[in-house]
Each structure stands twice: as structure tokens, then as C-alpha cells.
Image 1 (cartoon, rainbow, N blue to C red):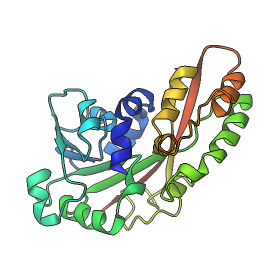
Image 2: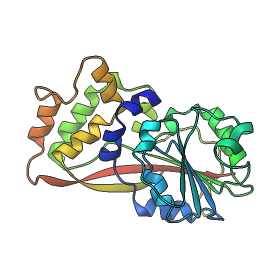
Image 3: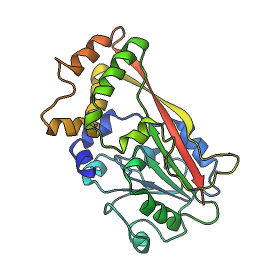
Length: 258
């Protein structure tokens, strides 16, 4: 799956929503220390940029050099390209010594992971007791009633081009295997709900669609999901009214501790 994201790294950087400050404040309120955060599958560093405002040091890793090339330079963020998988024994080479990470974050990526292997690595990395792991995804954006109805039909038609792992995203991480204890003050590991509003014009929305792995898969099969005669034309006609609209992405957070 990393190969697909490499091919649309620029679209990903330009088209994906910015995560809300409320999300990071909530996560940070659950960590006992704010020394070291590890942002896994950081992509272009969207989450890492916000974490850098709260944590002393952020290690942001990704397997894609193309994605990392789109990340900004931030003084307390160390962007590192890593292998697709890391063993607990090699954790210190790529991230930090075992037991020293206060927070692990995974933004819009956990569903692609081999969860059993990753959870072993996460437990090795996190500080004990109280190290926190937070993973979130966002589901279909909302614009307005008319556009949302057309978009829902369009999104349903793209099903054949999504990997099976996408199903857990559509469910907002409900049912996701997440074997951690609730963080302090909470009774469950979530998902907890937030919203990420973005101001977009139609071309910006199309850039978001082009950043999908499903879009790239369809292109490789000779199908343009935004063809003007098909989905693109229907979405364009439904984008009535102001040229720039508020597009709201529902965010679903799973958070736990060791």
C-alpha cells in the first residue's frame, strides 16, 4: 500500500484535512509526560507539526521518501524514513530506546498495519507505566445536503477500488482491535469523535479525492473516478452556491495506555 501513496504524495499533502487543535489537546491531556512523541506513518507530517507545538521532541517516521519530501522543516521534529516494519530489537536504531516514548500517534493509517506486530512494537516503545497510544481516522466529509447525497452515491461506486482494510475506516474504527487500557478519566478506548473543518473549493475537493489509494488503483485499471462524464461531472453539478465551502471531516479517535 505504501507504493500507492508514493504516487500521489503531492495530492495527499495538498488535499488532506488538517486535524483540529482540540484533538491534540485531548490527547496531550492524557499523557503523563510531554518529552517524546513518535508519529508513525507520518506521511507529510500533518500530525507531527501539531505535536511539535506540545511535545519537546517528535520522531516522525514513514516508509515513503516521497511523502517525507512534502513534510515541512520543524526544529524539534526528526523526520526519518524507515523500513515498512521494525523489530523491537531495532527500535533504538530507527526511533528511540525502548520504554522512552511518551506518546505514539497514528493518523489515518493504522488500518493498513499488521496490528499484532505493530502492537508488540508499540508496547516496547512506550514508557511504563502510562505511555499512551492514539490512532484516528476520518470518514466521509460533509458539505451540504445536496452535495452529500451525490457524494454518497459516488463514494459507494468506488467500493471495488478500495482495499478491504478500508472497511474499518468506514466504521469509524468501531470494532478495531485495540488491546490497551482506557486512559485516565475515560471508561473506554473510544472511538471519541472530533471534527476537522476545512475551507475548500471544488478543485480542492477533487484534489482530496485524487489523494485516495482507491483513486490511484482505479487509474492503474484505466478508470478515472473523476471523469467529467461520470463521477466528476455529477459532483461538479452538485457543488452549487458559493465557490468555497466548509467541508467537515468527522474524526474518530482510539486512545489507550500501557
